[in-house]
Length: 584
Image (cartoon, rainbow, N blue to C red; front, side, top):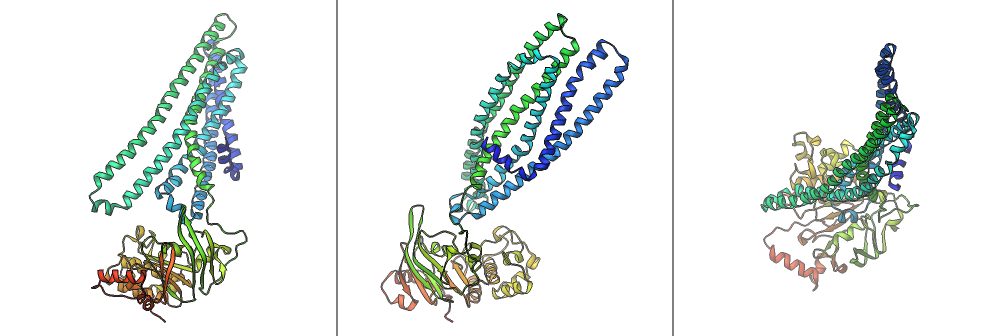
């Protein structure tokens, strides 16, 4: 009931249309009840009394009645459909909005396919509950009330006899409903798993084919699909059982009524018209009760889906703005880490980090894989929140300012470039008001303008999903153009050249040099050859800063940096050194 009420609260802004829908439902049900009442005068006047005058009146009355009923049915269907669609649109927007509020840790732990399934599959089932099923339930309820009134007016004794069996028809609705909701929740969870599997397999087709793993992935998919099949069959068994149970209960009611009603007609206590009119109303009454059972199945499935939807809506993000958070203006770019520690899933990733980065300083962060380099820079824009300590930008705690104003001051270029399935123009101007002149200038500085003009539609060319229509070097230069266009005073380069070939790397390095001018820059790099000219190099090991200094000073010391440098240059002695971050 709590889930019902919560879903209905979403309909409150559209209460006027909902009221109209319910009025037309009631009128439609009243017309249907009246059609059952017309059976008595039709039979008694025409077929038994053979009244010719009624032969012309009654058929016309039936036609008019059904015309009115059809009009009311259309109006209630339209208004209820409108309310249902608006509610579902609002819920879907709310789910997506709250998902966007979540920190990166949420997306680290939740498969992409599962999140997609909640927005698409789960909300679609909620739609059935809110619009189609609720409309059907309300309409059937109004119809039952109308027909009960008609039945009582004609034969109150027969109605009471029929209603003695009613509790037996309600029990299976309730009992089967509880089981169906539990199974429905299980189905939605497995659909989410299947969606996640499909997302991984389709986006990873290059690897699947490279390792000839098509047969293996087919087997995995078949196993997941068979599991889903078995769960769905549990629901099918319950649905298949509920209908004959209702049929048997209905048959008992009809049988008892025929015996008692027939006896009353034979004894002269009732007319055939009255009895058949009552039977018509009873049969009409039985139909909406059966429909209630059927719609209850859909409602329970929708309620199971709504549980999963509300899990996202109710989830409070770990990274929150303070109610009185200030708006951060354009900063100079001084960054301070004051005794910063960060714990992720009970594992200490960073421990007591103390570091000050000056305005326009270029620092490089190096270390083995998994020591916390990327985590360190992810704490600055508050992709994650620190466990203890302070991070300040221009002397202001990043937790005291709005997320939007903080992140406006930070540009990010990563190894895994994310381009959206949109035009090159939109990808470069992402999040910033488009300006043709500035956009072209940013592209030229990123050495991207010339190759963009050679594309089929220039800046209006669609990049494809994740920029699939562009080469690695081209994608990286688009990302650099995006950072240049944003013109933020703080720049983070996370392995920005590690996946490029030698020629592409040379072109990207030139673009990066333009990007780094006049900005506080933090470079994360595995290849030490790319950061030997940084103003300062920070060496991290086991979540702590163990060394810092220039390349020249660190190479003369015994320590992790010298070991990393000797290891890399021993393995790649023939590789060309391409330094970035020249002192200026």
